[in-house]
Length: 195
Ligand SMILES: C[S@@+](CC[C@H](N)C(=O)[O-])C[C@H]1O[C@@H](n2cnc3c(N)ncnc32)[C@H](O)[C@@H]1O
Image (cartoon, protein in one colour):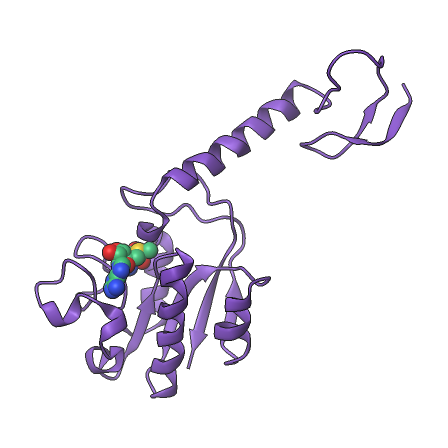
């Protein structure tokens, strides 16, 4: 069958075969591609519905981070999700430690490293990253788990310009906690170290 020059399967991008001019044009080359596209749409929809501000660092990555860095403060957490005993978060018993954007991370981290898996909503993500940069300039290193969004202005401002070290993680993380989708994320992640 001849392929139509400009029409491709919306899932695998293979050229679609030519078909009769009547009826709705096909969008996929076969049932598998149609199902794959449906699965991806569903995953994105679940992600939009879930609360991305509260996705927890996956268990195996937590262990790796704690092995590699002397983390003494989790700067964005709740009592149930914190990586280490010292944390900043809305349910902290001490009022002074409930808003990480209003306190000094260096004060609570001591000589160690701050861990940051911030809320991913841009309105919160950016001030958290700004504070990570500021904290590192004061001499306290920060390691962050953030979306690998290298095409954004915020990546340039808070990662590239301050010359943070970046490790891109292979594959898509399955975040934990009651608000996560259970499936792999629709975006890649990176570990960023400001020091
Ligand atoms: C993506 S979760 C990370 C949880 C945990 N640290 C982890 O990595 O699994 C972000 C956390 O930031 C907390 N959070 C939201 N706003 C905050 C704020 N202003 N100060 C401190 N924590 C905040 C939320 O309660 C949430 O638990």
